[in-house]
Image (cartoon, rainbow, N blue to C red; front, side):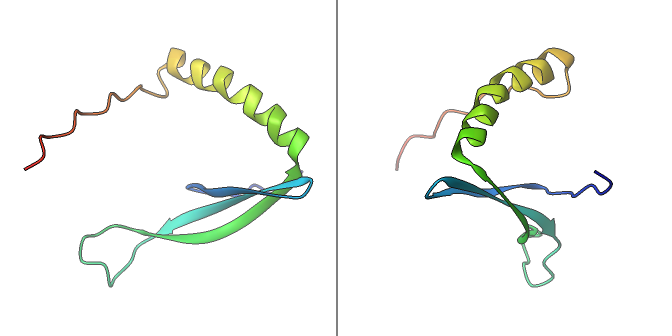
Length: 85
């Protein structure tokens, strides 16, 4: 493997038949958006058998725990919703 591909996030995961498609995106500045929020731009798709996706899903909790323990990821507590008006 010689090339690295960068993505800012996962757009979605779709299962079609025996394969899963993981679609990734990058973020780009959007001059038309006055709020300053970047727009998501499709980057690439990874296609893998659903069995491989299940294996990946099994490994993610361990990865998350490791990142939390090392301090590279912090747990965020959601703020309580305000009272409806």
